[in-house]
Amino acid sequence: MAGNNWKWKKIAPGRFLAVTTCQRCGVEFNNGNVAASKYCPECAKIVQREKTRERVRKWRANKKADRRDHGA
Ligand SMILES: [Zn+2]
Image (cartoon, rainbow, N blue to C red; front, side, top):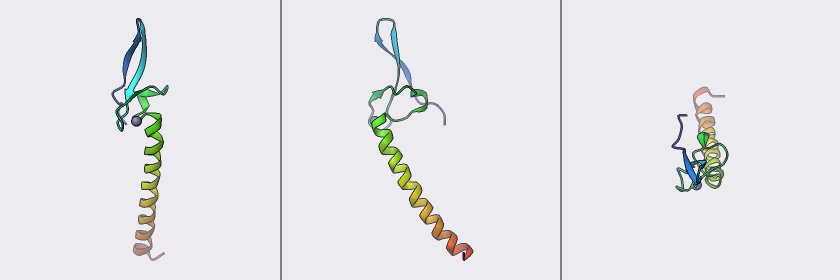
């Protein structure tokens, strides 16, 4: 996945902190790995849960389709 819009934020003269903007709630955050993160820790939890739910939903749909297509 190509990078997000993380940037260096000046937190004090001569001091910068890498921050990125949460793509869900818009808050700026630093979780130690901004280049690989799209969501703040709070939203990451929620998004992860939604993804899991979506995966389970697809898995269930697939299982149903399999049974129909292959008669297994
Ligand atoms: Zn967020």
